[in-house]
Length: 102
Image (cartoon, rainbow, N blue to C red):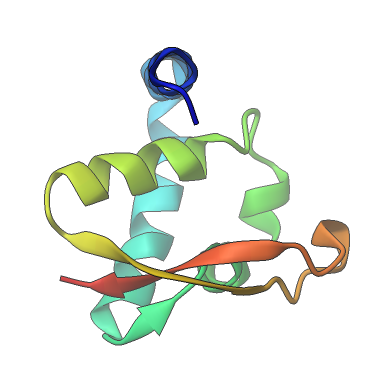
């Protein structure tokens, strides 16, 4: 990914986070916190499963990515450098990043 593309990604995620409703942000943070509290490795699949129907009610599903980025920047989680196939039907088994608690 080019530096310019990374800047645009970061700007888009900042905009998503800035426009998020407080209750949506809290729902995502609560679900991510629950997954992280279990320790070990995880993917976004686990966070989405933790959210259940709340995830599908988000106005902007990219909010999960924005919050993951914020938690990474804060040193709370780190990417492992590994990927695994998503178990979510909507993702059609695409690779998703594996994270771990830092």
